Length: 376
Image 1 (tube, rainbow, N blue to C red):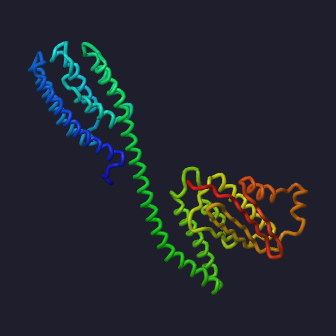
Image 2: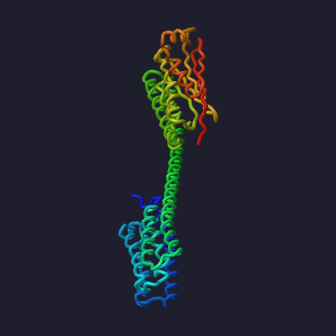
Image 3: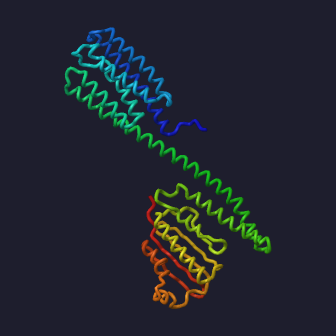
């Protein structure tokens, strides 16, 4: 099993690494200010003990947060509890008339740890707890004290939101890189299959027809396997090439091939369409093929050709039967059989396209022209 961290954990690791540097900076600031204001302490020994706690706890948390498995609720809860305890100890150490708390900005280490690990909710909880504690212990709450509390409450969720966004972007990039690598591997395998297996199957098919007998049966099997393998390659190429709610029309049309009777020719690249649109096009095409089987013969060949242009799609379905007798469609409509009108022409018209029928002794051909939705 791979031990490589996921994209989200990797982002969190880097954020806690940055937090370790910030903790060291705010610790130096807190130590320097407390030394400068040593004369304000009513209990200097207790003040020195608080500074020692900050130094020791900063070193411990720097080590503890460096390991993802150690970032438990117990550690984060203890981190916040130490910050709250130092705020509560300030009136005892400095006396009731203090102006600056003992930890000062050092408490933002716990706030940011909660925001990084628990995102918006964690930042809000930690910011609220620290802000309320800081306001409660102060003898007077002025504009400056209120401003500091407000920044704690609003800063935690903002940092949490930014951390969540960074993790989401990293996860999306990770998925995109994996998809690109998978697509590259599929392309490599498809080239290998095309250069080897498909060519051999095509050769067996051709030679089997020429030799006849049992070899002809082998050729039929080779042709069937070649079609299935081509369809599989096209289906694999379509993976990740269509967005949510889309489907590859090429793959859907290839599924209409049945033995030797139906030949489907499509572009070499996926044609992404909304699912409903693609389904209607395939349904209309299937109706055309069913008409060939019903009116020309169960073994009559048919050809489906799809051409994709930037602004439109052109799809033709052709057979080499005797054609439709003159007036036959009008007679069928008068009898209430609306297969051509509803199943074929109606579907294409509803999609904003046109369906033209050409028939005669040379056979019958349907030609569909549909607008192509812009790609996103």
